[in-house]
Amino acid sequence: MRFDRRGVALLATLSLLACAPADDRPAHADNPPGVADYRPGAAGIGDPDFPKDGNGGYDVSHYDLAVDYTPKTKQLAGQTTIEAAATQDLSSFNLDLAGYTVRQVTVNNAEATFKRAGDELTVTPAKPLGDRSRFTVKVDYAGQPEAAQDNENLGTYGFIPTPDGAFVASEPNGSKTWFPNNDHPADKATFDFAITVPAGLTALANGELQGQPTTAEGKTTYRWRELHPMATYLATATLGKFDLRQGQTPGGIPEVAAVDPKFKNGLDKLYKVSGEVTDYWSTVFGPYPFSSTGGIVDDYAAGYALENQTKPLYGGFEPDEVIMAHELAHQWFGDSLTIKRWKDLWLNEGFATYAEWLWQEHKGTKTADAIFNEFHARPASDPIWAYPPGRAKPTDLFNASVYTRGGMTLHALRKEIGDETFFRLLKTWTAEHRYGHVTTEEFIDLAEQLSGKNLRTLFDAWLFQPHRPA
Ligand code: TRP
Ligand code: ZN
Image (cartoon, rainbow, N blue to C red; front, top):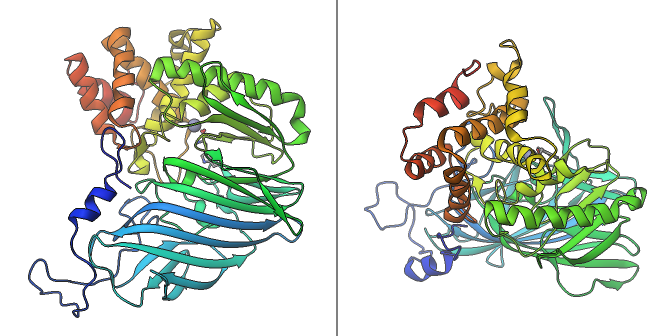
């Protein structure tokens, strides 16, 4: 989905202007412009580092996910409805899906044919789809989820079964382990969730709960809605036994905190600190982008956390203030402003790491400058100097340099342009690209524009050189 600067969806407007319904003429590659030229959508969205992630030829505006999961048997039955618009004349298109048996696919309510190859599901609609036409895809699937594996820094991610439910954390490309989708951050969409679990369990997803959960035949369905565009990796359906606390932050933002009973003594702290951090970041980064905030602590010992939109997820530990500050800073940097290509990941992790330092400065524990100096004093042989954070490597995306040296880049910038311009830059950055997509080049350009300085040397040394900056 594409949004303009004020966050207004452009799709509605586009589909009015787009007067090209699917026509029935055969495809000819040498057709004159304006005449249908049906061909398959690409198997990847065009991220050279992740050639099969996402897909080409269409743009999703909305996912409607129905997921029924039974922890005892580990069986998941799902129906995903996708609202999309073609970006070329399409004879077929792909979705990303890992595992499961696909039972049926329809396009615009007509049965479609499909085939599977690896994590690609290729759908051939009964009638080809004209460029810019809107269409609806429904996929029925079922099976036992298989989580994804990252050998470098993350371990297991995606839909991860736990003894009482599931822990769902999908960055960078694990959402295909639980629903068919266009699995790349370059295509954001709004989401509706209907998650069905055995009665007595709680299902948590992004956004806000829609009405009271309904129970029938021993199963309860929770309906959640995220009405702001969201990258697929930020979607969650974390479920199991949970204790909840709901209300509003002191600043008036609706809030939901949930903890596995094992962590029930931490519920009030999770609730209170998440609210305080959300309110504070709203004064530093600009207005909170979403309709609610909060957090989830589950008993799966991931040892890490993920910034799932509106509800960061902490895996198997009681988060301290600093990690909550990190995950909630991602609501601006990563979730509202989303990268187009994974190589720009420092725009997420460097900013969230710098937010950890800003939080400590705010609390009077340590200044960002003192933290910067400690890291800068690391010997020239330290691995963070060999890895330039401005170009995250596909085989080692979440390297410590992307976090720490990314954060140092922002501090070096702050020293160069001064506090007034630096904090104005952060707010301008989040305002100009709210709900949209960003690149490193755009950040450098804005920093130069607001400061009136040439900053190429600074950014080059901090982001792109394989050695320690002076
Ligand atoms: N983005 C997470 C962070 O806050 C780290 C992360 C990446 C992650 N992929 C994940 C966490 C998958 C959980 C699952 O730094
Ligand atoms: Zn992070």
